[in-house]
Image 1 (tube, rainbow, N blue to C red):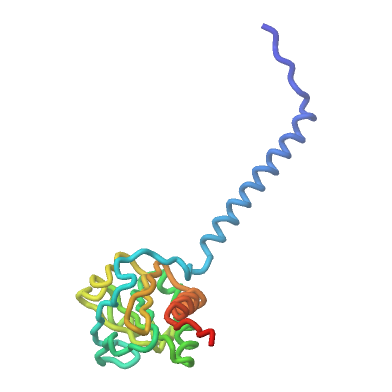
Image 2: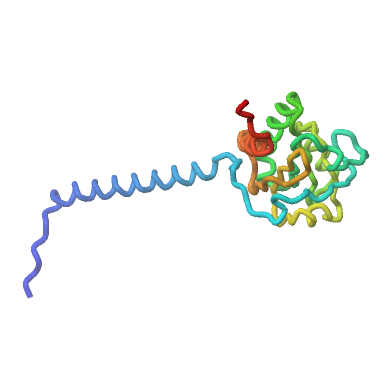
Length: 202
């Protein structure tokens, strides 16, 4: 059997260079894709289904760890403003990443007086929680939930999870995987427009 003709080495070199260049380009594109998804901010609009949506928020009665230790907190006492009920733990990496967003949201809305944050501790050491807030800021109430009763009432399966409660005490949104300040603003704004009475033509 006759041997197939082979191309000279000089003709193969350009093809090899093209192949290497294509492989490098694909590799760089893949690295960029991974980097974008690894460093992107928590999705403030990653809203999830919940049987609580549109229903009265389960009552939260608990003992605060911060900013004032030992005080009794009741969610029902906070009617008249939006409340972001945030379930978190200091060992939860997405919780740590979203924390500055909650700080930004709380500070801005504290000045306006229309919304606030409450954090519910999810399976964590109370001293670690106090240290975390002292080091990272956050002036809102942090409630202990040692038996997991509050988490159970809200159907929490993983953290971070946040529930937005409207001024009338109804759950209007559930956000999983982390929040952003802007994402929470959008939820509050949308819910506020639904609550606002229609403008009169007169």
